[in-house]
Image 1 (spheres, helix red, strand yellow):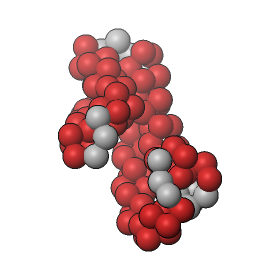
Image 2 (cartoon, one colour):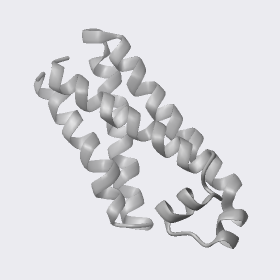
Image 3 (cartoon, one colour):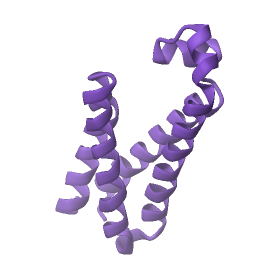
Image 4 (cartoon, one colour):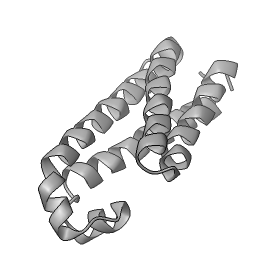
Length: 119
């Protein structure tokens, strides 16, 4: 895996760690409510669901980190987890907010291309 690919995979992993923190720990706090555009009442009612989503984002970050740790042997792992992120980002963009495609799917797609071409 080339340096550009590693940097992009690392960025996507860190992004998903950030999403984990927002969804698991900051969902009901002002920062989390602001990021997701939530009312205090709605955030309280959905905090368990958000924590579950955050956990899944943590698994994506862990998988991408594992791919980086594997070095050149982690290409297939990176492709798998980046593909999962792209699918999740497109689905979220279609079903929740179109902005999710730009925030989640596009960086993963760029990383996927970089991993695929070996840069």
